[in-house]
Every structure is written in C-alpha cells, then in structure tokens.
Amino acid sequence: MSDAARIDGYAAAVLAVADAEGDQSGLSDQLFQVAQAIEGSDQLRDALTNPQIPFDRKKGLVDDVIGGRVSPVVVNVINMLVANGRAGELTTIARRALDLAATKQQAVVAEVRSAIELDQVTVDKLAAKLSAATGMKVQPQVIVDPKVVGGVVAKVGDTVFDGSVASRLQELREAWG
Image (cartoon, rainbow, N blue to C red; front, top):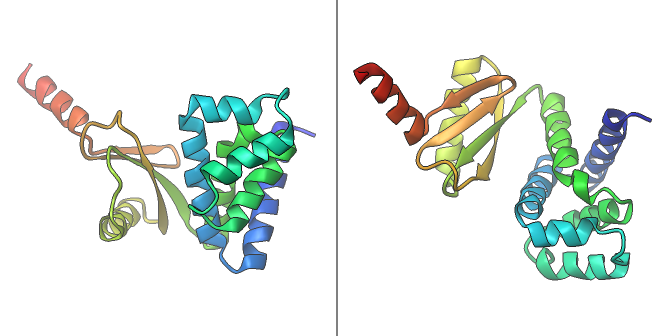
C-alpha cells in the first residue's frame, strides 16, 4: 500500500469516528491542533515516535499532556495512531482529514499562520475575505506560528496570501530601492 493510500485510509477512519460522534469539523480541527502541538514539541514528538518506548507509557503521556484539553474522542484517535506507529504522521493524517471533511462540504481548507491566536470574529472575517478572493467556500485552519512577526499568511491550495509585516516591509524596500 502506498503512503498516500495509507494516509487517506487513516484520515477516512478519523472522519468515520467524527461522523459517529456527530462532530466532523470539530474533531478534525482539534486533531489538527493537537498534531501541530506535538509536531512543535521535539521532546513529545520524539517520545511518541520512539519504538523503544512501550505503548502504555506513550498512552500515559498522551493522557497527561492532552487529556482534558480536547475531546476524549481526539485523545482516543491520537492513541490509536500512536499504537499503530503513526505518531510521526499525525499532522499529515490530520491535514488530510481536514481536506476530506472540507471536500464533503464543498469547501477548501485554508492554512492560516499567525503569530497569535485569532478570535472567532477575526477568523470569520478572514474566511469571508479568502472566500471572496478565491471564489470558493473556505474553512480556515489557524496555526499559531511565532515566525510570522505580524499579520497573517494564508495558503489556499497553491495560492499564498501574505499579509505579514515581513512581506509588507519587503514590498516597501523593493518600492524604495
């Protein structure tokens, strides 16, 4: 089985669980946020992907670090992926689950990077502007990224909308030579 087919299979399983729970977008969003947090922590990622650490210890780590902060279903999905040796693919699986969920709703996922957490009003305004710019229904997935100094950078498919302070400063530099 190819990597893409395996990722699609896990993403479809995540959506099946979400459908059974009646919360497809919420579960996918939480899973993506947790996957991003794990990816951003070298220590946690290394522990969850280390084949020499027994699953029971990994499960305890997931429960301690993530449990109580997200839906118990998300914790169970993470534990299932870790048990199957897929901790290193969490972000890829979560991103694919988001894409599949958006496709079911005839939408696309916009990866939005911001230095700070955005409130729901701001996310909704951003979704409306990205939808107008692309002509598609857009579901923003916000990633807090300290590398974005100010503003936001949004990616919809292959199109990047860079509203960051860094890009605006670069534009000014180019305009003034």
